[in-house]
Length: 561
Image (spheres, rainbow, N blue to C red):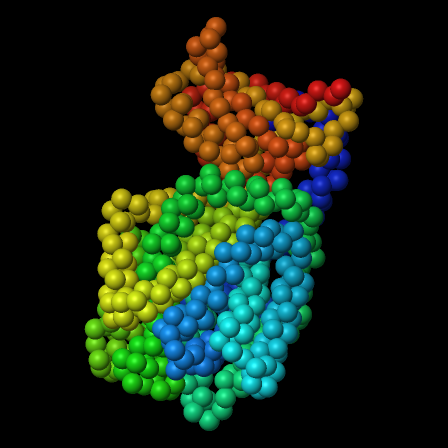
């Protein structure tokens, strides 16, 4: 952060950077050259070969997953306590996110993501194969089914952050909204196809066949990942696991826009999970439908989601983000209310199409906002936190709504969930998404020059804690400086500081001193070279607009001996 350029001191920092793998190898080459100029529509990312093949493989796998879910729920729909058991299938597949997503995000930032994903999906194939063998042998009890479903949920939770994090490697920044929409469309095309196929097949085959199809579909993803060749230089050494876990958590805690997105996701998915958890029992007990009818209801949700994906770009152009989220949430609520109150399968199919539109619009909007907000260094960990809230909230909600339905009845449970969903929409008046979330510049910015380091000091990246003092002479509006400085303090903590305080010099009231602490010297160097973004630069420049001349910087290290 000093302007001095002493060769020995700069050399010391560069050697430390080299020992940490910082600045030696760049990130992945951008794929923008493969996309025709001006292409930014819904389908534009599919012009990229790697994105296209991975998208197709994911579609095959998602279809198999939905067939697996329908088969598992239908095995339990005629058991005693069917409402709670079928809801627990949903919970068992989703709750592992709470346990492993954050560590999975760290692993996705540390290891080669392609190889990591291949290993995880191979494990999923093994679990699927075990379920097929045990089902054919007649050894699958409800408990065994839930345990193996939980195992598949673990593999999905391990893969989720890495899969989300590779998307910006596959498309240029301007296509991230379209790629996020295609990702949501992928899931929902599978939701439209998978349950319908499963329902039809269950008329002629056992659930074991559906489980086998799921295993084969997962192989498609493994093949696509093996065929993908990440560009040279895409892999670089990352920070240690424990340090990465802590720094990722600090980022989320000190990112108000991200925290607000997570709150809004939770307020939506917890009540919305009631429909997914109880729809099988609605089909069987309330409407008297067989497996084909259940597949038709799930397919209606999927068709609606595809319609929503196709019209999402126009909706974003014509509506504010808050109005879009509120309207889409109410559309989904109409489907839940219909499942609770109507006895007509035809009417419910129509309402579920609307609910599918709402589901796609809400979750695609949240995913897009986060992918445009999170900087590269913490993207997998940030998306892991999103998945914990989004999928974990569905898992908790599914288990809770199953128990509620068992106690008060399916109709009353769905009405209660609809009421909570509407309350969540109303809460936007107090807790909206922050206005600039998703529009900040997340690109890495070398805001700080190399720190001055005495060549006589033998520094190790693990040396710490490091205290940084920055002295400012304020010549402008003090109140506006203090407001800007507080925002800079959040930036310091977001990028690695464990504490930050602003002091005023008692001898000279125009002098203010920032003091913040970073756990290690290596992590402070990562602040310099990896973690600061264009948005952090903007905050820093706002504060310095009220100061006179360059700021004086000191780096304080623990004294030896």
